[in-house]
Amino acid sequence: MPDVSRRNRWLQSLGDGMRRHALVIRAVQWVVVLFYALLLMTPAMLPLPDSQARIVDNLTLLAQFLFWGIWWPFVLLSMVLFGRLWCGVLCPEGSLSEWASHYGKGLGVPRWLRWGGWPTLAFCLTTLYGQLISVYDYPQAALLILGGSTVAAVGVGLLFARGKRVWCRYLCPVSGVFALLARLAPVHFQVDEQRWIANAAPRLPPPNCAPLLDIRRLQGASHCHACGRCSGQRGAVQLIARSSNQEILQATAQSLSRWDARLLLFGVIGLAMGAFQWTASSWFVALKQTLAEWLIEHDVLWALEDNAPWWLLTHYPQLNDSFTWLDGFSIVVYLSLSSMLLGTALQILLHLSARLAQDRALYWPLALTLTPLGGAGLFLGLSATTVKLLRYEGLLLEWVQPARACLLLGAISWSLLLGWKRLGREHIVLARRVSGGVCLLLANGLVGFGWWLQFWG
Ligand code: SF4
Image (cartoon, rainbow, N blue to C red; front, side, top):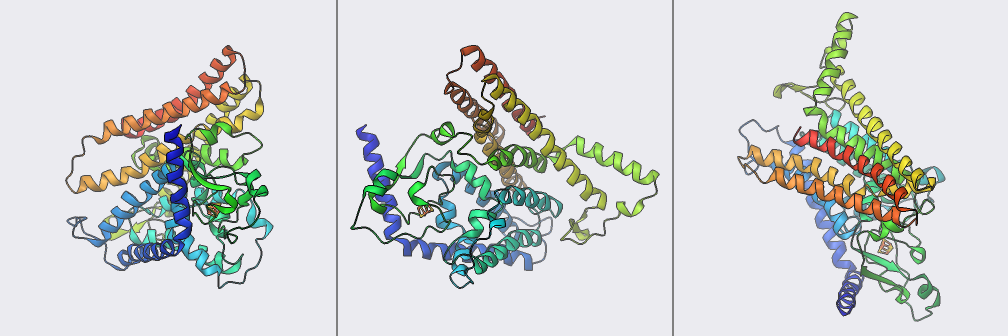
């Protein structure tokens, strides 16, 4: 116990320090904004690298490596380690959106914008579009998607709620994913509501919670951007350590949004797996061949031409890399099928598990127990780009496959442990808990098999 309290005292002073040094955080945010703009815009203005170019001597390749090889995988990892610290302290898009909102119209947040499905829809559409224009490979495509998202974030900032991050709270394509992963963080800003109510003056000035949270009733790390602005407020807000399992194990059907499970099963697992896999999939080749034969038989030859503009379908004829209309259509079909088939199979298994536990509403919290596996899948998929780029540089990286296996097995074990513990909270008889656990084992096994096919199959 003394260790725990010493650690929490240290964390508390860290949280309070973040509040005291808000100006330093602002300065860091602007440095990140400049770095982000440089990394995003400069390569898009340069000629595409030739086959001899290397990361060390070509800015486009260096930016590609930093963006997709380092930045994105490790931002995801940071969610699991520190919660949404990235959002509150470093994210350039959030910083720009909040900055713009100070000069905007300050209209209220309309009802349609608060719809909980936007982050899921935005994540799915961005993932799909990213594959169609090869966002990981070409700087123009990255500028279009990431720059477009930044422009939209600034636009939203200019329209709604002054001094806030309406974009980050309701619309950002990755905010739903971040909210899922942050539940696993071993630290968070905890609010003691009773203390908040009881604690009278003298008080610190009211903090500006940019993602529009009701700080007094804040529960968990999912939506909190961990910016530290409310640390110490009324003596009730404190950065503390906790178990990484706590938030998921305590989740109930009432405390969860239905979109959490939908995003996790159909987006983070189903769609993302299709997006990372289609280039190496024999099923994709078979689908495309079947469709091509049908098109030729029916004399629909325009669909086999690769004359779409680069912002609609990948089009770099100088590098022999152009998608036909059929390619584009096949990608949409393959990714949609991957999302629907995998998501539905997981849904069935989780519903079955909840039924066996004699509590249908348990489906929603049980779905969340797949979060570690979903996060590991995203990390594996994104880091495949890191590995690919480093191998182009001549590094063998023989440790990568065992490391992938360890990560995958570790994530499956963690998800299973969460599922088993969550079933255990229902006080059901052992036989029902075991049969519910078997369904969870099948669900985890199915996702694990998908990743096995990607990297070893
Ligand atoms: S509750 Fe709001 S102000 Fe407090 S740390 Fe989280 S995001 Fe920042």
